[in-house]
Amino acid sequence: MAKLSKVQRHKRTAAILGEVYAILIYAVLYIPIVVMMVFSFNDQRYNYYWNGFTTQWYGKLFHNSALIGSLWYSLIIAVLATVISVVIGTLGALGLKKYEFHGKKLVNNMLYVPIIVPEIVLAVALLIIFMNLGLSLGMGSILIGHCTFCIPYAVVTIKGRISGDGDTLEEASMDLGANRIQTFFRVTLPSIMPGVMSAAFLSFTLSVDDVVMSNMLAGAKNSTLPVLILSMNKSGITPDVNALTTIMILVIVAGMLLSNGVKALVKRRSAV
Amino acid sequence: MKRFLALTLSLALALPLAACGGSGNDSTPAGGNATDVPAEASTELNIYMWQQYISDALIADFESQNNCKINLSYMSDNADAITKLTAGGGQEYDLIMTCDAYMDSLVAGGYVQKLNLDNIPNSSNINEAYWTAKDYCVPYLMNYIYVVYNTETCPIEITCYNDLIDPALKGQISTIDGARNLFPIALVALGYDPNSTNEQEIAAAYEWLTKYNDNVVAYGAAEQNLTNGTACVALTYDGNASWAMSELGDKNTLKVADFESDPVQLGFDLYVIPTGAKHVDLAEKFLNYITDPQVMAKNLEEFPYSCPNDDAVAAASESYRNDPARDFSYKENVFFQKDVGDALTIYNDYYQKLKVGE
Image 1: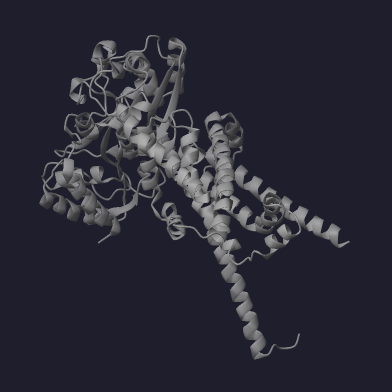
Image 2 (image 1 turned 90 degrees about the vertical axis):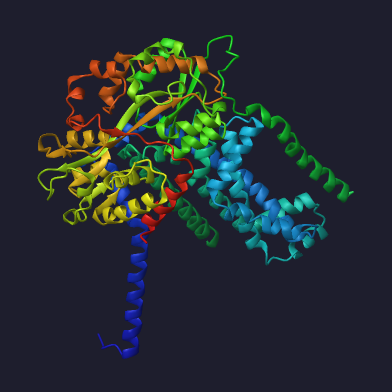
């Protein structure tokens, strides 16, 4: 191989350094997750140090009804919160973009309040309100709490996505005879769908992760998964929690691979 | 048309807020007994306590004996219980676990109900010395906070709190955290009252704690660090020390520090009935059940913490009574965590300074 010129050598060094840097970044992000997955096979109850390989925790996980029950509870709340937040968020973003009204500036700025205010303050305030109204805590109260911080995120996300778009598509559609509702569902919504999907994913993530709000507003009968794991912290988190999160990660990874595979397949099919 | 609609909508939104003010008053805390006992017995009991602190078998037995369902929720911090209590926990829970340090403020604020001790005859088994605020709570388990060290790897013999700031122990101490756990030991080491409200004394305690901090290798997970060799000294609860000693088994070289004169902190986890609780009858039955010596003795097998119920301790298994973690001679030399009122902010300020490392 011919000797590389100085410029080429510098370019190659830069490329290698860039790759090393990227690998280090991914390592910082993922090594803790890998460690957690490895420790789901640890043969020691309190998971403090490695004591041998075992798969017993995966079996024990399916008998741990508290953990599985709280996972379902978390997922149901997350799905409901996502649907509500995305619907309200989409309507809000579209309204804020299109229309001028009294107090628009106020609404725009007040949107950021639930995002900026520390969640614990929001949670305790909601708790006091619910207690004073005599509402019993439970899935409803947690849902309201989650929507309180998911809706602003949804509105902000979608608003950012659609801020540059003009009205021309919609006007053209209505020119051609579609009424407002048909225009919304057939023209507007598909065109803002990427923004709506990212808002949906964001809301889902925020809702599943949420500890503070769920802790304060939980009822006596059920708790969400993060709250349950947090309460295990005092006495030690057993490896079946690691097993559960490993399974959750694998499901997500499988889902992403599947969706990418389907997209690639569709692309290939349509290109043929 | 649009304006009219907007106006109506805003009025409709404002209405619930107005209604709020009216209906909010039925849950004002009142310190008296629940006067309207439900006609039929309750079939549900909601308890808020620490996780891994009560045996599943005990719960199941109670459920089958009383034909009811117990819903357990878990807290991650004492602050959670306080928030629930002060925000009106009686609506959701019938029994909440809190600790003795907060009882004065809770009783004064009217957040807990007076207990009808006639309904809890087994409570006579509890040692009176361990029962503060007798009419408002029932102690469940208690914990000593003391020093445990590894006789083989520890460079010095520890006989008082001041030994903990010895430079020979640099990077060797694993400790529990919390302002109301750390400051009292500093105050005792300096000869002050562990529940002091004097700012100069607390400041001096802060100085002592900065030297202590130099020797600390980890806050939290004290017993794990003892077993895996990260630390050779630990300031921890007796229940956790018991775990560490049994985990090491034959290789156990841990010993409870033989304090000569310094008192150790004794804390209690107590059950209280929040004001406005809905199932008081079942709550009192439960309290009577857990203070039964046989029931508690069985519970202690699974969770070998210290217990204020003398009869239960006497009925407990051999291994519980001979637990090396509770084999120390100064059990009478204890102090309790008392409510320090407004001085709590002084403690918190210095605690923040300690953590930030100024």
